[in-house]
Length: 251
Image 1 (cartoon, rainbow, N blue to C red):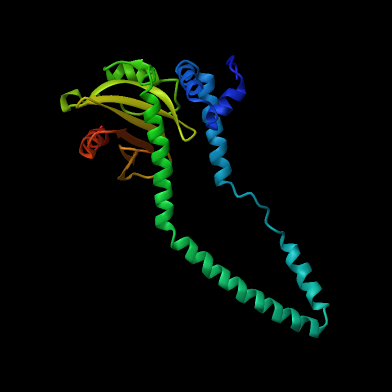
Image 2: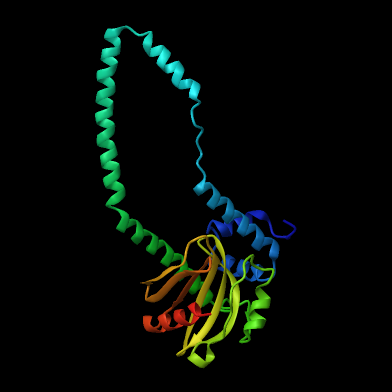
């Protein structure tokens, strides 16, 4: 990094170890530092790669031959004992497999609920941070072209920007934010005397129907479109969020 900030500060921010005041200061710094934005994106890439990596080494085919040769050298009585032992282990393994399958099938709903809870927590926390003084936007503009050009070079993906003032949602500006360790773009809209944060990030997920939820009195709705993830959050009625989501989907 060529940034004058210590690398430990970036890592502490990424790990959620900074205080609220430090987070606010660092977020202001992110608005003008491409080095720190790139470092955060790299950290997120490493974490995702480790999650997807298969960290094991397959046994060589020669090992099977060695084991078989060794078994043929064992006395028949010993082989029968081993056979019974292996059968017992096979039965036990079968029971364990059944338990694991049940454990994986039954908690599917629970996993979805856990994901929703974790996702909602990160989104709502980011929304609440944005409501702190001077945290809502890194730049203020109602012109979509101005907002879109400001994001160029600050994030590594392209997304559409629209002003829906004629439909009741006026573009206020944008900022670069961090949600669950992921660098995201955030568009800010105002409608019906309320503020709406729309978080946007790059994803490999396919397009899908929107999901909705609420946390701490705040409503959110998220969806995927054209390899981008979107999530709008605010505290008005869910109907307003759905209206904004429809406008954003039609961009």
